Image (cartoon, rainbow, N blue to C red; front, side):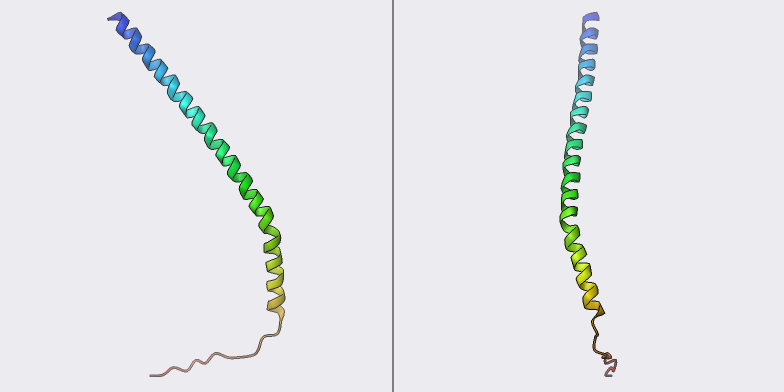
Length: 78
């Protein structure tokens, strides 16, 4: 009886340490993936920022051009 209790306690402790080790490795893995994702997002941002700024400048230039003064036809038929 005493020996089975010691075996059960040992297995429970080993299982507990195993679960804690699994949690630690999973958290480290998630942290690495998050860091890689943050780096990729930063690279995309630095690549797209000049393109976006150029687009805004061009849009502002086109918006400042004179547009024809036309009115929409609001007549309806019944």
